[in-house]
Image 1 (cartoon, rainbow, N blue to C red):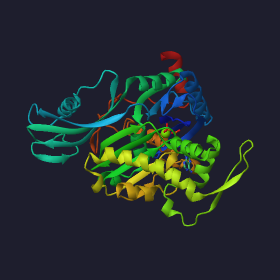
Image 2 (image 1 turned 120 degrees about the vertical axis):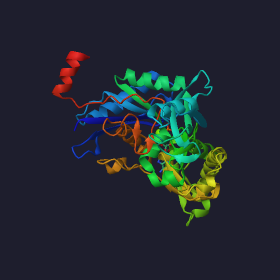
Image 3 (image 1 turned 90 degrees about the vertical axis):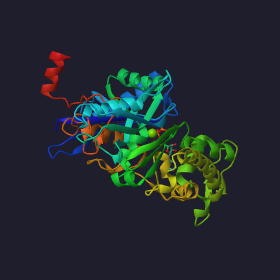
Image 4 (image 1 turned 60 degrees about the horizontal axis):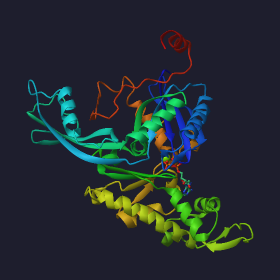
Length: 418
Ligand SMILES: Nc1ncnc2c1ncn2[C@@H]1O[C@H](COP(=O)(O)OP(=O)(O)OP(=O)(O)O)[C@@H](O)[C@H]1O
Ligand SMILES: [Mg+2]
């Protein structure tokens, strides 16, 4: 084994790290995982660098107990003002009218030449389709004959300060960052199949402090957005309405929560623990579900309102997929049907060998996806930025420098060249 990728996801409630290595069979497999409570992060944004650094260090150290040393990570970003937009570029094909990689680069540059506010940076440039003369829906135009090359792309921009602070904190924890990836995109890598992305799917990642959404159609993203609220909001509502502490509200949400009142087959009684002088009492489960449904309906309606602008919702053949810790909530698929008119399911990470069962949960989709994201960039998979699906472009397309296990060779390199 010598090809290693490390994913690091700094969430609002937890930080996690997955080390994956390519084995002799060529498959990427998990070799180490680590998790720590997240401190200094609010709604996916670092608000206290010192506290965040400590959390990052703890998660990395936990993963390193596997014996693999983390040198560099692919980091997930899911907070701040992140919004995707669609754009288009056109160029005349140069040379012998056979499209070359340079033409593709030029057309992508033309498509992303938009006014981006000073405080924002491009995180991803994702091609949707190429048009060569009048032929549409081309995934990879290289070597095709044509005079005019057009590209339709999806650009994701993020607040520069937010990604800067993320990189800064990871660096302060003693680790490099090779790439920053939008959480929803890495999660998509881990939970969605190629077919789902092709026929159309809306992925909604509900974290503690954020909700990330990305809509795929014909294999490419057409809509992406980060909302600055997540499942914590639901807990706060339950606490406020029932006048109970946040911890008790969180326990109730996890144990008895439901986002679809009509779906409750039996309306059981739920015990609410007493606080201070207030005695323990009981409530009907439907009463809690009503509070939860109201908030979840509001969140999903907001996503629906934004995603509807693409005009693609009615065409989503694979419906809605929920991931992130908030996806555990019972009744979400039914609520999705009512809000979007499409069926919903829970998405858990897959596609990475060696992932322990305890990590095959929706809250780990993003970090597992980051490792899978890195796999695509390992040397013998990516050929000059092109793969079988066509050119893959991102805002940070720097070649991945790998984290290596401690070895004699590595010690030699470190001593002599670093
Ligand atoms: N069974 C459950 N039912 C409902 N909600 C749950 C359940 N289990 C966990 N959650 C919620 O999931 C949230 C944590 O999700 P996750 O770990 O994906 O968030 P995060 O990555 O730390 O945060 P973010 O991505 O927003 O920065 C918490 O708010 C928690 O209450
Ligand atoms: Mg998260």
